[in-house]
Length: 290
Image 1 (cartoon, rainbow, N blue to C red):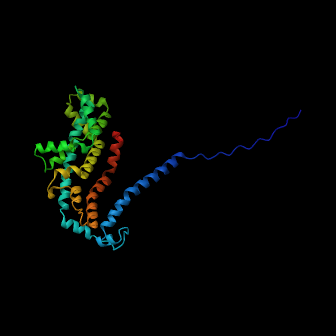
Image 2 (image 1 turned 45 degrees about the vertical axis):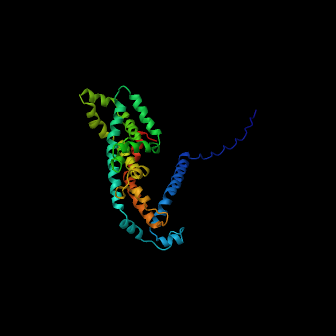
Image 3 (image 1 turned 45 degrees about the horizontal axis):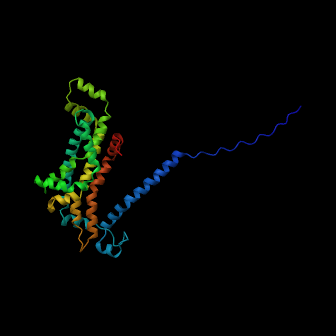
């Protein structure tokens, strides 16, 4: 008896699977490019406007090349306004704020991470509540407080409020909690005090958290506007943001001069970020701050 064999049907062609990883990478690259353009276009516009003359800006405000480019606005702004003094004031205030914020924030984070004492939960709740309050809501109480201490018009009125930064406490606490507990217990068994554990063990290995807090504090203090505007009433003691705002006049706005001063104001921040961007990313990734 003969058997009838049916011809086998051709196997369906395998559909090439879509590489999800490459597609995701391309999508991320497109998003990053769009966000970079959103941030770079205003910067490029301000830079190009600062190199033009006021007459060409008034005649052709949308043309970036009309009238030619020159550095006259930069020299005029530097010679006719105390921008150098504003730079020095901002640098001194930001440096002091970084120094005190890193010192007190690291000690507070160390205490919350390792020490066990009565009322620790209450302290932690108060620090967390500080994250929920907007800085504008504290302007009036702080103004009354520093007026009572006769600190208005001084740099300490700008430095001290930035020291009480809840985010710095949480950054250091998150990093310190990642240190192996056995290392701390071994140091305590060997007779090391808590201060020695903090200074000799925890701080030397907390460079990512330290750099993150330092850079973020420097940038926020440098960009602060409302509080320095209320506290500092003399032109020579003003900071860069407040000084740049005083250049804008309702009667006669010199666009090139204002843009040149703005470019001079945020160039240090760009330099700080470009130099320390690796430390910022490493610190954020290590501490888990979102």
